[in-house]
Length: 134
Image 1 (cartoon, rainbow, N blue to C red):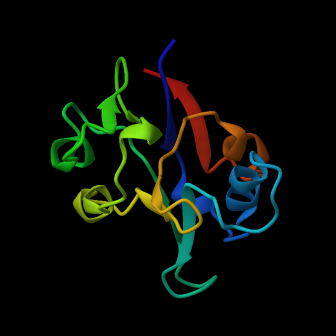
Image 2: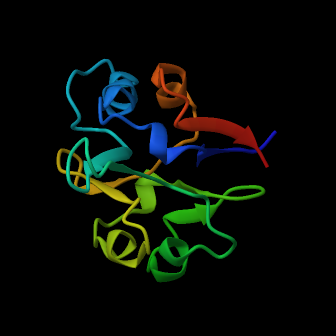
């Protein structure tokens, strides 16, 4: 079954960033370094937060279209996956994403792409994000 993350209620986000911690924790690491989800403030608690995560664009996704080595390929249904061996680290995919949801892994010099595992959603106590089947 094809799944993707959805931001179902951004108004409920309190900016705790537990989703970002959870995402990085997939790699048995602490912090935010390898997170493929971003929570950013648009003015603090009074004005709220924005959750940036891959929305699994319709095919072909902008990041897929600009990849010169076909390292980003469309997933069955929606979304993309990275074929790491083909990636040359040009960063065009990061620039092409219209919502800034292709992140950069400084350690590997390659993009960090959401794998739609839902780990972040499991840690969101406020019901802001949810893994859904498409």
